[in-house]
Length: 249
Image (cartoon, rainbow, N blue to C red; front, side, top):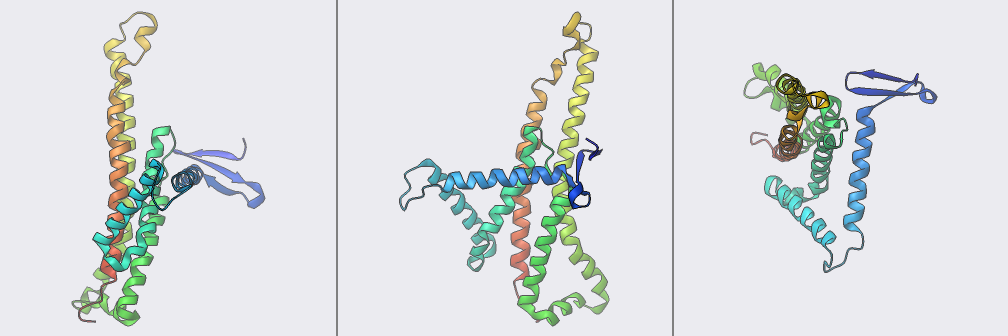
């Protein structure tokens, strides 16, 4: 146990044979989420037929159709190949956040996770801007409408991945913190209100029954799915916008 240290909500495991490289709880849980999604994909796509005869294939086709429709509606027909990437973003984000329902530390509650996704999207945005306008046109875009605006345009560009990362991270963490605070407050309130009950009954936190479950439906389920959808939507809109050539270019 000497190779394990606790920092905040994360547990770091050090691997001596690799020079003491730390493996965080976020990394472990992310791998678990990826493995779950991989197994789910295998189950849904096993034994596919031209004419669907199983509910599994119907579910798989429904998911594919919905994602392809989402990409086509928001990015256009030329970006239909982005459907797998968008599906992966939604799946990773949603399943990572929903892992909190099973007592796991959600990877999306770690800024490193969502910041990595945001940086990947930022690189893709930059690539499509250069592809659409050329490298010279891309640099020229920072000087519009006047050269004086160059520093502000650079800050605005860098603000894209920052805002995407902190929006996702902030919503997931705030839900986790609020749920924990309410859970603790209910325990204290239960002791104050029902502590007069005799014996063991006075120590049972009755008020913690039911209410945290209702909060979990919103913070752990609704918010998780909503943030996954928003992150994917922003990704599609930013990339599609970046691929449009500058009118003055």
